[in-house]
Amino acid sequence: MTQAKPSVAQDIVWRLEAFAYDVVTGLARLFPIDAVSDFGAWLFKRLGPLTSTHRVAEINLRIAFPQADDAEIARLLTAQWDAIGRWAVEFPILDKIIADPKRVELVNGERLAQIARNGESVVFISGHFSSMEIMPAEIIQAGITCQITYRATNNPHVDARIRKSRFRYGVRLFAPKGGDGARELLRALGRGESVALMNDQKFNGGVAAPLFGVICHTAPGPSSFALRFGIPLQPMSVQRVRKARFRVVVHDPIWLKDTGDRNRDIEAGVRQVNAFIEDRVRDRPEEWFWVHKRWPNEIYKKKRPV
Image 1 (cartoon, rainbow, N blue to C red):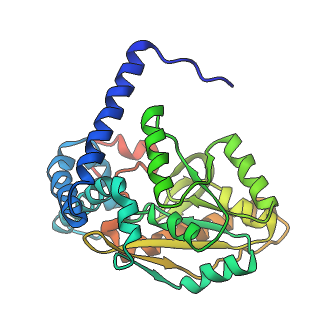
Image 2 (cartoon, rainbow, N blue to C red):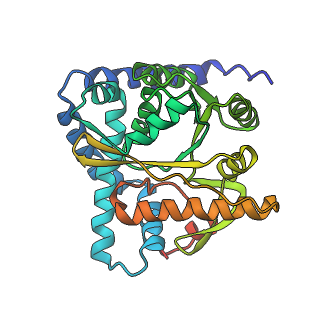
């Protein structure tokens, strides 16, 4: 379906946003990497608490850590704004970070080498942990042919710049989300390629499964793909070591049980994925993307955080 042409006013707004993006990118590339990262942390720790998403983050933290007292919740709120700020301003210079071997440590890289060497097809899964964009870069640099999903921004000019930024560190394969994206991923898996998806955000109409003991809806795609093609889920995660230095962890593959009851098997797979996400979040809570409304909307309409 052809996308409607934007109005003149809308296009002007988009172009102004793209100009602002170019200015921020240009400035970020002028300064040392750690200085840029520190500035993002400083800025977001001051501005983040003034936004409506601060309350979303607090609600999410109280769901995940119901035993935490107010002081601990306040500490985690500050820490997650620090992490989000660093991630936001590091994106325009991610190619510089990835190009420095001292800044990215790969744990269990032998597994990626095995996938590439044997031409294996897997479903990479992860969550919005730390600087999550480093993960697809490591997959591609390992020599793995992989379709990597992304959600295009509403502003086509900014989206083109984001794609160009990703090209700088080697990520060139994209499958748009939605029905067309799903079909593209199926074709890639049919060719024996791999696919990579984030599986930690709310997916309306997805499988209802618990996350931190509260039912939420999760995309069934990764589990469905793995079962359909008889291939494993391959979890990965990104950790921030210090400032703009990272550790990418390749976890043990998850083989889903195929009992012949497809709906039940997919639900079991979703529960395993949610358990993986839980484990990573509990281990490093400061580094998850807490500002997303992960649970049902009704939870966020309450007057007080849960």
